[in-house]
Image (cartoon, rainbow, N blue to C red):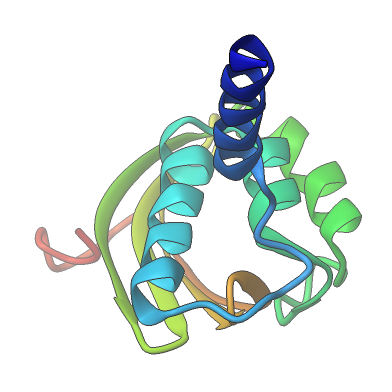
Length: 148
């Protein structure tokens, strides 16, 4: 019986640690912030698109980028190949109430670097909407401090 109780306790710890944040469920501000930080770690730093999106992005999330489609699987299909070639440098990030934002530099072979800001809206524990602002560095930039 003691062995069964120990195994059950270990299983519940593993399940809690790997439980998905989506579909959305109620979350405190602290829990939302923790989900946001986990998403940032998995997506921008580890570049593990599938883990980040399956655990944190609603299946039918709304995408506002004119060059991408809404929906989790569409994003995974678009981002997995891209993330094999780009370099991401995280510059700034923040979280307030139900919105998170990430400002980063993206370097892609054959292109000028881009400054990107992603804005993510949460419904409880899950990201349900995304906006981004993307600016490519001009070839003849006047300001040496521009963008970064």
